[in-house]
Image (cartoon, rainbow, N blue to C red; front, side, top):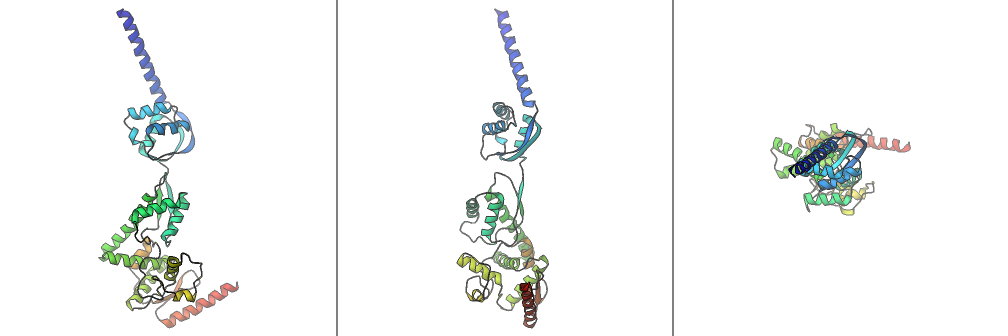
Length: 331
């Protein structure tokens, strides 16, 4: 009887040893994986992740992979995102990829000078996500506050599945960091930071040339110091957008005379809010204007502007621009 029990025990041990060897072999078995991108959803359990990987033939057995992740104590460490799998892999390799979060990275570039609504439209388009998701994320960050000028135009990296709030928060923080540096350098309070942001948004809309930013900034500062109205077209255009909901691309004399809170032809000082999201270059140029006496500027036909200190010089530059425009229209 004892001998029979011993034989049964030995058989069981051999079977268990064989099973352990098979499991170990299966876990470490390398196999060729077709190149593919697989998205692991937010909140997916290790069992669900294993099923996804098995369906895409990244692993041979979902149940074995799920058991392996739990046994290794890493079942809760699998990170969501879009992963690229290819080449020869085994389960330890796959587990390492998922626990290290080696997800595919994407980038989106936001140009300087967009209004916040234009920025959200671009983000939705470039990331192929719902515009409503971006609006909801904006609401979460700023509540019912003024949305203009709070997000730094830059190139940002993101992962999938995309988190709009995370990206907008990154843009918000980047702008705050630039402004905090300027505030420390200049000894500004919150009101001075806000004024600089508003003026920087005008600089951003007035010139596309980085070298001109400090000159446009100087003209703004000089006009304000002399109690002159800024009389800058982008503020009129923004006022039309805020009061009428759109701008058709043509600005008329009537528009210059139509009062809005942003129209610097009809109102003294700076607008109540930024008119776009300025970049770091414009924020800094506004804080540090060029040491020049410019009060006026007009397009010069080359993509830049002709600057002037006196009205007579400016009028001459305007006449030159009119001649250039007429010549361009004839062609």
